[in-house]
Image (tube, rainbow, N blue to C red; front, side, top):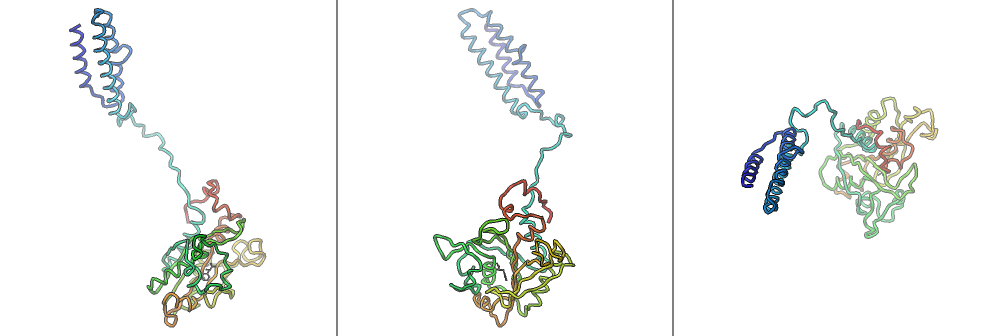
Length: 343
Ligand code: PHE
């Protein structure tokens, strides 16, 4: 009995000093000590030779010995990476890596980036502003005083808690914010989401995206506006596309125009997209109204400027052949994953 106990003590010293550098070493440890033909089993077998009155005491020693070995086994396993193959030689470098699915950009983002990058080459910088605006930035400063009939041109969402707040109906509000900063000249692009209370259908939505532009300096003329937009159209739709300006009305520009390009689907011969006219309208523009400049403390006798604004959805629909506007906001991955991240 004494002999057995001192044998167990020796074993314990040996176990305490055991090391394993890899899973193989851990497994060898397990087989040697805890295996079906292992040392623990062998020592257990000695139980039958122990006198009956000592059985209880010896049982405890044995039990403690087993727990000690098991806990050593667990710690060896942990130290070598949970018994997984971990030594350099055990890694199979020819196995394929974990797949990393690449996302794709939203088609509206792709189109926005495309538009922005063209104007950036002319020196336009990007400015952003809040989607919840006060009446002054969305209307008042843009020469749309309260009760002005042109407020009806855009069906506005008002914020219930404070009717002075609206969901911006255009990103022209960001133009006001830029002018308010008082740093001239200004050559800015304002991309962003805008809201109008329209029935949701394949062709219209209660929110959509715009890119507006603003250029203010001394001696800016309508000729500058036209050249800037000609450049844009050429880069965007190709050099064969023709452009025409139609007189229009916006309260914040004078004179105002809308710009059409020859239909890039049918080339101008007439199709469903251009309603057989051969032309598609792509943007509104004009010379910044002197009242707008005054509202932002810019001297209209010294400075002039032009502004323009276009929707992103329509060109995106035409470019990517999307026939329902609602697809852009439904977040259906089957739709979204068709677009690559290229511009
Ligand atoms: N803000 C106008 C709109 O949303 C677009 C526009 C911008 C027109 C700038 C002229 C000048 O319809």
